[in-house]
Length: 175
Image (cartoon, rainbow, N blue to C red; front, side, top):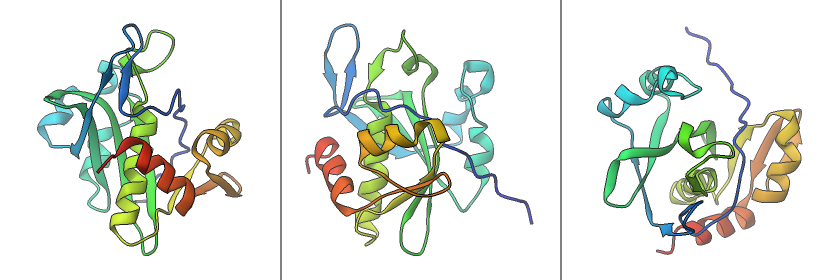
């Protein structure tokens, strides 16, 4: 049996927004989240600036891979999320903003927050009361506590419980 890699998540919550916001214009864009398709993976490569092997994530049947796009613009992926559905929570395996949404020259803010909110929404839909778990890079533990309301559990393990999850879902998903 192939050993599963446990990634330390190192996404930065640049801002919690109501959707995603263009950094230059300040315009807000509504987003959609959908399952990644094999066709989507053609441009999601390290050569194109992505940090992780999303093809390997996609091929792991224990994981669901989602893409964040702007409403009515499904071909430009703003960020990706890999989750596993556990017995009592959703586990975030990986989260990555598109290369053009990272750093000082990023185009959009709010991508990572949007994807975490989706993981929380999935947790509520599965009957897990919003519980989401993940492993954080040590240097980002305080950041996740402050921005997401996540709790530091043990070592680098963190989780988001019902109330912070509810706030994130209400921020990003109005329905």
